[in-house]
Length: 368
Image (cartoon, rainbow, N blue to C red; front, side):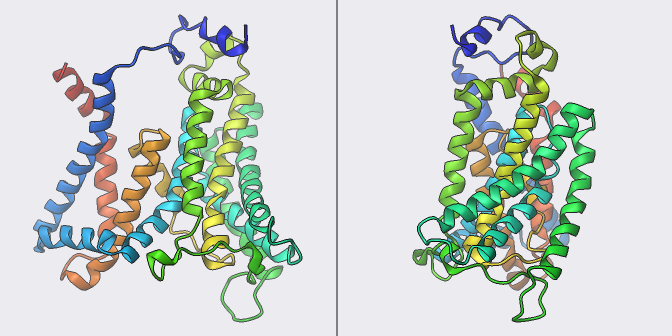
């Protein structure tokens, strides 16, 4: 009898994930419709705010749709903006499944970008056939190390990961800025950025989407989502991660080392967040730029929340947020009183409607 079968026999323990739970079509439909309805409600509330501002909600909605998917180039930019959010959303979701709150994806992605840039700058003689792989591994390893630290501190020293990851975000900003300005600074201009990575490390941009930076990192993000799903729902380690997240005490009764599992989960979360560096450095800029992230790590929390911490949900949620980011960029030109900052209002409204747990539980009871 293997370990998963042994754990499966202990499912009478309360709050452990049941591997043999019967499929419920009703619950599946509810789980599918609830975030969709929540997004529509959030959009409705945001457009209502537009009406109070004296602008046209219909014009704002048309602008959002046209600017995000109105052409191949617009859609390419939407997918480009969604790519880092898939990575950070998956990072937060992995930690959530282990009962951890990873607020450190911002620092982890910075180290991922720095890791990719360092490998690309120092590995000028690297063969073209393996260069993108080594650059990607550099991003993952750097982000993974930055995720390992709070995981180890939580598991072995009892330090709360929220405090640790917040502090590590500031440290990541300081150290990567120091490395950029004093060790890898470009000699071509005065911008706060590193030199350009060797050309063999760069991903080819997809010209079908016009003059956009969309590249193979998007496909890598989708593959990562599939691998995360396989890991969490089809492997023993994934069961252990979910068991610790559901009930740490119960998981210990079946021999699961919760500390070890949480260290692994946070390391994996850091590695996935670090993959943002693949898109930003190897796929787009070709260099590390100080302040390149418009808070991808923090938006990833909202992406994971909207996606219900499920890989497929994270992908669709990230594309939605990418569309909002791209769509609102045209509001400054098309409307009189609504600016691109409207995306923040939209995101806030969507988060509020999705996270209204009491309301959705009430709806669930009434529809039974």
